[in-house]
Image (tube, rainbow, N blue to C red):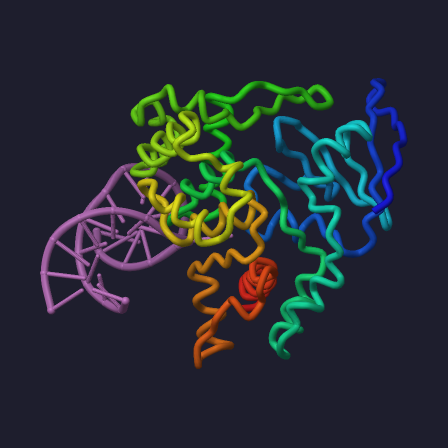
Length: 284
DNA sequence: AAACAGGCCTAAA
DNA sequence: TTTAGGCCTGTT
């Protein structure tokens, strides 16, 4: 994808935005609202603001382009990887069209991309996600960031970064009481300590395979098959991960009553899952 | 008011 | 290996 920089002045201050030529395989609403992330929020103008990888940003569509606050260097260092800009989603979509249903689902989900998110943030967020709905997940994550993250400014507004594992590792579960996250608090602290101590090396796991990563993750308390698959897919860049939640169970029951093996999608199983999930949520 | 949420854990077949 | 019930909390 081509990237060029343009400067735009707003509210009297020089606010730099960088333009990314994305074509149609980049739909902000689908990317941010297909359940893979919890910290981006749409404004009245359709722009999304949020914090990721320690940076606050606003991102909006402009014709065939995306404009994101920050410099070209930010795009190269952070957003290029985060938005998975190297992969051609049009051909990826083709590769998961194994039947009529998958064709419908992937057409419907055109524009979804699998984000490459911060590993610890993803682990922690999906621990919180268990048995919760999205609004509550977002609320708990936001409270966590406000309480323990660092403030970052964007256009005069204060946002908070996701606290790093070391910060949470030093706490006791009771310290997370303000989050109102209930029985998940000890899971969060245990995961933070595992990451902080190096007992769980997420970066190293990202260079292994699905089975290895899953085994290491599910060894932690409060992390089962589903959460592990989400962490692996959304932050370890292992595309064969295939999270199955209640929506996916419905989708599979409806469309593959005879049984179903995600391995048919190979390294693109996770993307196939995203299309099935999004399709099921919107139409199921 | 009781049941249920985008799971996980444990106990029991 | 599969299944039921409980778990914090918030919403319906």
